[in-house]
Amino acid sequence: MTPAILPWALSGAAAVAVGFARFAYALILPSMQLDLSLNYAQAGWLNTANALGYLLGSLVTVATVQRFGNHRLFTWGAMLTAVALLLTGLTRDFTFLTIYRFLAGAGAAGAFICGGVLAGVLGTRAIVIFFSGSGIGMLSTGALLPWLFELAGPQAWPWAWVVVGFVCIPLSALAIVAARKVEEPGIPGHSAAWRWQPCLPEFTAYFLFGLGYIAYMTFIIAWLRQNPVPGVLPAVVTSIMWSLLGSMTLLAPWVWHRVFNGRADGLPMAATMVVLCGGAALPMAVPSLAGVWLSSALVGVSVLMVPAAATSFVKANLPKPAWGSALAVVTSLFAIGQTIGPVAAGWLSDHWGSLSVGLGASAALLFAGALIALTQRPCQHLQPRPGGKKAP
Image 1 (tube, rainbow, N blue to C red):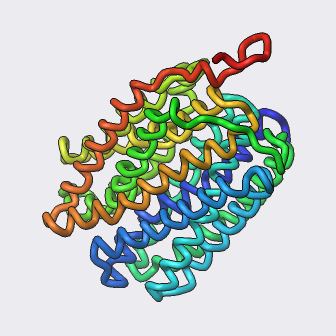
Image 2 (image 1 turned 90 degrees about the horizontal axis):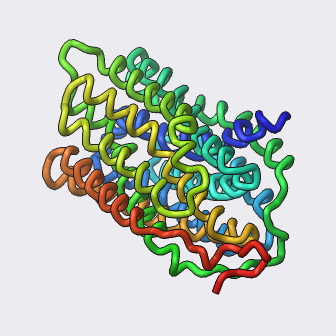
């Protein structure tokens, strides 16, 4: 496995943890709603269960990464996520669906956080590649799943999860092999002290990102079903939209690399969140085929660059042994927002009778987060001086 291939192989875990475990749910959700007679609050709850698992996984990572190291937590997380996705397709019981969504989220946290840390060892470009790898999951599910439901009907949703699970197993295995070739950034059993207060704007913005983006990724396909494009098959609109979203995610490293390189402030997060906000609001502002597809392009090119911006910020401002615990803390804040987001957006949509209300509120939160991130300055006092001493 050559150095050039290593970040892409590692990014298979991001594809599993995010592209399949989290974002594929939006494609499968409408069929699950029809077949299981779920309302929007119940549909949001299943994604909230996933987010609660992600939150627990983040907290466990905070507590154990210094003891077990990033490699071990990464391996456990990737394996648990793949198995949980496979099990999701083997039940129709709402309670078991909730449990499997929870387990998939718990595993995804370890894979995503520790994978970002290991990518950071390889450099800033590897960080961007790792997070953009989630586009593999979005591109493949977008190209295939809408046609599965068009041909087989909504009752085919269990097969969708089974296929997703089987695809995730080799991707996880490849990522685990790649991770073993990356140096552990810290020494298991040793901790590095760091201060969170100077990082507050970046961390707050990341919390708002978790709160805001998840409504779009959960409900945009359901919104398209509520607002069909006249004369065009829903499967065509959905397939092209999700495939475009995944394709732009894969292109994102080349779009954003100049913004990320050498920056230790909040500009990368602010810039990516502004583009994401525009993409999330566009379907309501321009309810047409062009608006929907442009929305997916803007969201695709930005949504996974926000986590990349958070990881790059930690890497630039904190000592290497602190990367694991710091990213686990910031991801826990993100996970809290992600936990609240689907239920809140679903409740607003049920209350007002329109998904546009929940989606509009999420876009407003993303814009607020961008403004807060813009106030983040480099934490120079956390960076070593050339002589090896830290600035006071």
